[in-house]
Image (cartoon, rainbow over all chains, first blue to last red; front, top):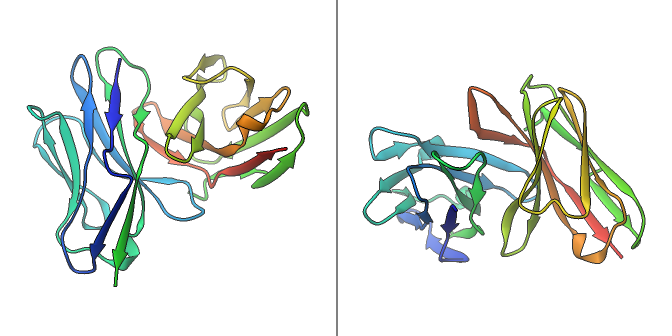
Length: 114
Length: 113
């Protein structure tokens, strides 16, 4: 079975500071990993994904994530947060060998304070 | 994503009523999905369809049914609504060549009294 955990329901960061949103996963095989973002009253939007290759993945709006196989983590990062980054962030995983669909985490609310 | 539309956007209904949520897409994608979102639980997959003749149950299909009327249309029905089906419902699409990059509609907020 595949699962994903986002240990923080809420993350607050000051504008201009670096931000990190944490994600850990569990799969029996190899993972595909994803980050999606949800702005208020909107559907989810794709941010970035790790399929294979370089462990550091760059995505939309200056976000990046690092795949760490030994720690089974895929944390989302941005060097300098903007107030407009405030949103709900979801990590998702698919076990390549055994699953047909994504499993989403419970979400982390990011608030960037001006 | 404006290419994925959902109707209605908001719905209030009573326990025991049958309701249908509709999803249409103009992206030309073959795969469509229905999710529900509950606070603290993230998104959970209800049903998914890889093409018109391929319908699959997701994690939480009990109490729901779906119809894929055409490649562009995927409807979700609650045969007899109950209060714990109160949630935010999302339709999503993806292309066979990149199935994990999903494109979401704006959501339908459903309240069952």
